[in-house]
Length: 129
Image 1: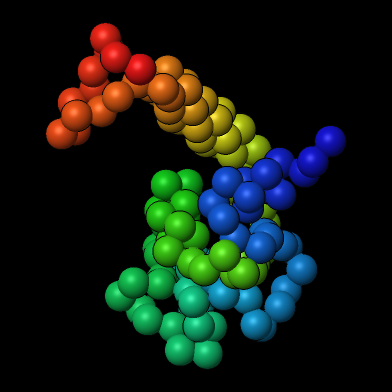
Image 2 (image 1 turned 30 degrees about the vertical axis):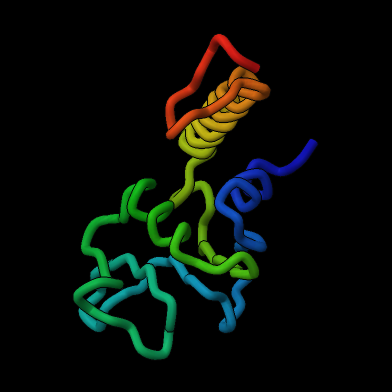
C-alpha cells in the first residue's frame, strides 16, 4: 500500500513530502523558538530569508493554508514538514484525498457521458451522435 503522504504528493502534483530535513526543500514547514522561548510556526519557501508577514504564524497554520501553499509549487518540488502528523494529520489528508478522488470521478463521468455527443456552439446536442 502506498504511503498516504505519497498519495497526497501525487494529488498535489509535487515530488514528495519528507520529514527528513533538507535545506534545499522548496517549502519548509516547522516550528521555531524565539529568543524569549515562544514557539512560532514557519512555512517558508526560503529558510534563509523568512518573510515575517507571510511565513511566520503565531498559531499553527491550518491544513487548507498548507495545501494552498503546496498547490503553488512546481511538479518537482520537495516539501519538508518537521512533523507530518502535526501539520498534515492523516485524517485530514484522507478527507482531502477522498474529495480529490470524487472530483476526478465526477470529471471522468461527465466526459464519458458526453463522449460521442455532438457539441454545437458550446451546446450539447443529445439527439445526434
